[in-house]
Image 1: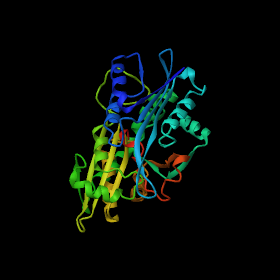
Image 2: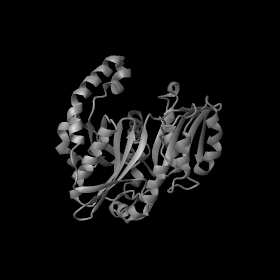
Image 3: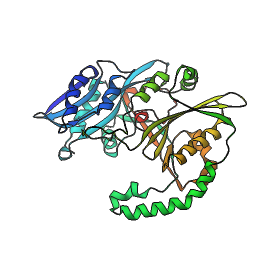
Image 4: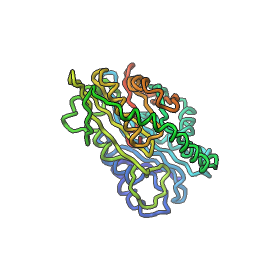
Length: 362
């Protein structure tokens, strides 16, 4: 078996020709490749792809996303997110993922983190004993509409019956949902914005100054311009992770309090019928009810089934609306860092829902 690694500089020359071969399993989609190449925090020599091949056939791969965090002294420290892992089904449980992980550890000298993990990947990381939890963020998933057909249809094989049940439940609830949508909201001014231009840089930088990763307007706009998901039809491609959706949209809102002029920003991602909030900023608590109400109206207008939130202030602001939801369940987020980073990480850190690679996919 051959182990190969590719730096960011080598990536485009290697991958572009493969996208025209519908038979070849590619480790990165064209969208994700474009994002990697434009990453403001990456360097040309960064190793970002590791592959294991046998007689030219791809058996397994691992992808990494370069980033930086700010250490205990406030200095940027470069590392990479473990962002994608695949092994051919007939070659699983043979140690291939372990070999690729060890290769990534060697090339990055252990400067690795991960989140948004699959259970099999977490089992691999746990087995090494070299990763520690640096953030355990309590979150909640708010279910607005019934969607058992989408969630359970394939597993139970009873899609038509579940579709009918969803229709009945949602029709019964539509009246109460519509009443909420029509409520007046006058505590703040709300404006949808296309991106985080210079006029919003100061508030972004102010609220991000305590963040572990301190992603500024430049980083945000790179992510907005280079998502990993599209709703446009694309050529057939053998790619393990989904990169096409029926709907995919980044939604940005600016809020300002009429009395004090204090500001807030909310970055939402609509992925099919699911809403997430990668980044959420409020300069004062008076803005929170208005911001929460706006997010709920978007859920209603866009026919969302549920939203996952981990910002505690936003979760608290959703409590007055509890009666409009079918159910609410816990949905925590864990972030892990390699043991070699432990002495560099600040004792207290601010983490946002979009940290990691979550802001690219929702």
